[in-house]
Length: 70
Image (cartoon, rainbow, N blue to C red; front, side, top):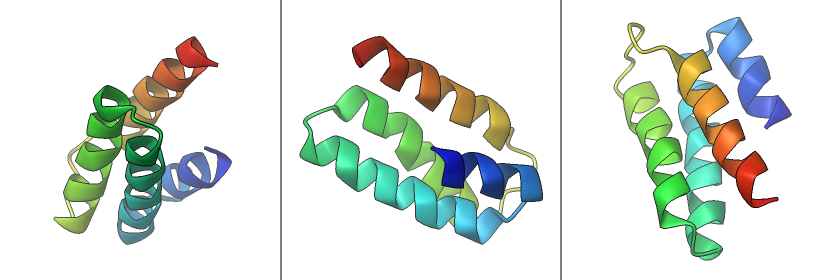
């Protein structure tokens, strides 16, 4: 999570996508499809180079969902 938050703070869109991809894979491997949807959106929007998406909000949503299950 720290890596994703750091990339979001820096506005490193392509790196945000890469970290989103890693999260998505890990979450799917754990059977957490609903939470993986957030990571998928981060990945897809980052790969599209979308600068208008609030990656901070998506990251917070991801973190909140993970906190609920831990």
